[in-house]
Amino acid sequence: MSKWEIVGKQMVINLENAREQYKVLGYPHRTILKMRCPLCRKITLCDESILYEFCPHCGEKLDT
Image (tube, rainbow, N blue to C red; front, top):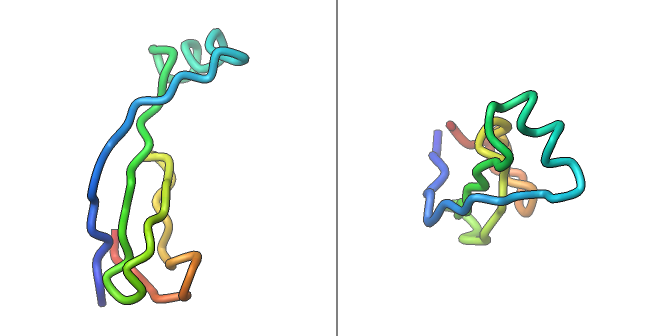
């Protein structure tokens, strides 16, 4: 089984619901991962807490 290639991380703040994010996470931001599928080589942005098991571009099953 193939694995996602993590090519970057980025912290995102959504100012519209920063107060709710702070209550849930303890801080007003979340981390977005920039991942590349080893089969189709396309980039996918994904919340760090919700990793995809399949590539949304080619359907390849990937290990997280």
